[in-house]
Length: 366
Image (cartoon, rainbow, N blue to C red; front, top):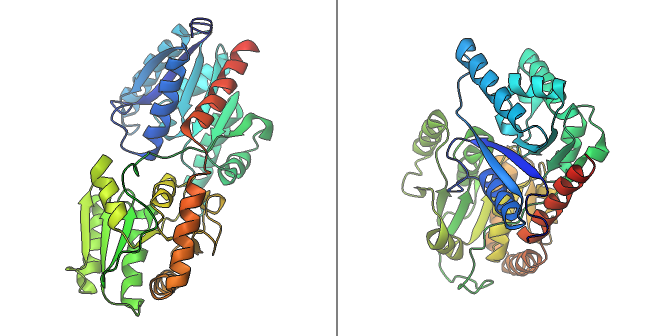
């Protein structure tokens, strides 16, 4: 440790008060890599983003100039940024890239779907990412699908590095691959409650199922109140109020117990850079039905350790649920293969060491 201490420095830009506790998958990724750099003896400083709205152009500009001053103070260090914060640091980012007195690493934690945007918003977003990525020395992505998305912004692919994340270790005491002998099927979905996570399509699938003895558990923070209202309207319209539960955010043993009691895990997301919750579900030997989008097909082998369905296709989702519930042989195969694959997926140490080597390499290359 002593040999590497202070051999190079890092300035990490994050959301305000978002390093701890880790609430989202992105925050967990950031905190794990941050902790690993500290353990390696790297001098890491934190610059918090105070989320000044860019609707107030004067406050936004002043805050960006302040960020620029902070960036310049750390000349010689390596700046690590999340692509989710690009709006808050845009002016500072543009100027620091123009001056280029630092090395820049971008964590591309999120990917975006330009097809769902208006023409002008899509064009402006693409231009923003183009300038953001093109001047970065390294871009860390979570999957090969994310690499392709970043590369579409005319970025040199040699600067895009795939480092898959691991997942929280939840299954410590509970034996996996145990069939729960209950008539009621427990369908579990773990993710933020927001429109791009696609919870509405799971709700729409339920009336289309032949199997009617089920309970659904949505676990996660509500990020969009209007979307939650839409979900409740769907639930009321389908008369499913006594079948569907919103638990809010669960962590640790509470979350582990929900996984352990589930019959099937459903992830109906519309876009996904990777899908860390799939790791968690696999570690409990759960049969998984997930959208065939983003990095998910890089984790799930369709028909072997999970089932992939087209995004937003609730009828196919309903058919897949019936298939898993009624076919005990298939369910057992999916459970066993999912659990076995969970033992082979990358560990946090693997990914963090790869990230450390990339950052250290930039430092050595000046």
